[in-house]
Figure (cartoon, protein in one colour):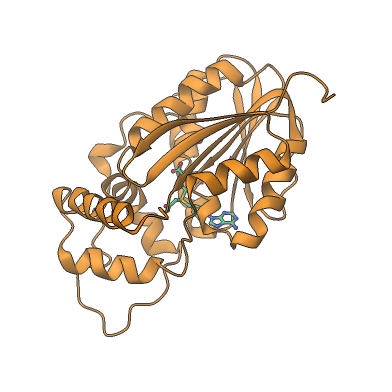
Length: 259
Ligand code: GEK
């Protein structure tokens, strides 16, 4: 699988272009899967930077004959960068609960098979990450996925990730953040909307997407994320990236047995 060369062929996201009398909740269906690469790159400032860094981090953390988990893999963008960069034998388990997303990812994998020679085996699993088993992992990716889980179910998933990581293993968690301070929140929201306008979304598209996603994507503060990562056992937590409301952090499982 390769991460290169897809942008020229991306279908344009026009899902919220026409006025709808009742905007329904956002779902990861066929329509979204079709335009997903364009949608996410025009909606998430810093998405490309986070993906590129996932490749670099994979080189550092993935150890031979271990597993990598791409949780909420969508069309497999993170899986693709790991495959491109990692030169040791490993297995990537890519999990998503959207059949539409996985069908597209499977197509991408088939196309990429023609040009590979890569050391990673990729397994696709259609499953909710709340139910997935994590074991023997050196690197776990939760790139913009935890935010779609009911908040009460997030700690359980993180605890199972912690338990399934090898000592010294790494979780990459990227999320949309919320801010307790009202002025910070409204400035960050405006800056995000400016980003979307600059990338061609109209006021109507921005407003309708916001309505569609507000019950589906529940953001938390950076402090809530860090506290919960500590509670489930991670010893070192490093926020390494932020662009407006989008942030990414690394959480490392200690190499030594806890005292
Ligand atoms: C990327 N990581 O391009 N279980 C499994 N999958 C889920 C669940 C769940 N409970 N809830 C949502 N998803 C990707 C981007 S997108 C982010 C991740 C976004 C899946 C959902 O089907 C979708 O594919 C993905 O999580 C979120 O690196 O759209 O903002």
